[in-house]
Length: 206
Image 1: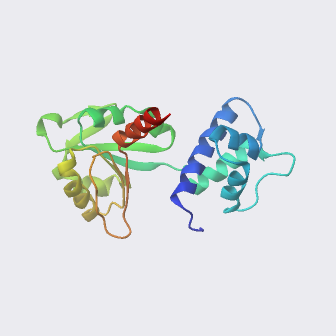
Image 2: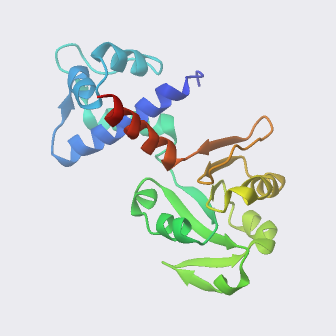
């Protein structure tokens, strides 16, 4: 598949959500102008993003919502399920475990790893909480593909290195620290403080 930028991938994710909403509202077609209006980009940008993957829609008729959503789902790998492990059963970890949108999008929690033995040996929402030392066998047996990191910042690099050694190549990091990984491994950082700072800037400079 053709290599595309991260910004394009993010827009495709937004288009996917727009199409899901339109389908739920019973709309069979949608124009590039409508997608652009909802997503606050230009129609030309929408068409350019989609053109990376072939020809879609018909001039004057727009895009079939179901067909386009399926195609974008194929591109983003959303028309399958992914085995996910969560590391860290603190406040953030517990909240993430209860976030149902992950399941709806095909990201299925298989296990929670936790270093505090007082928190292990139980389940939450049907997901078993086990000690991190047991990860080698569980990552293999449950075929874990993505690991979500919800541990203190000082522990994040060590934890990610540990799971890289177990063969995991994709991480979503909620720890507020910079992470260094080898080529072939991807880490996406989710820092809510940065988003709040962006809002603070907007309110300060409006």
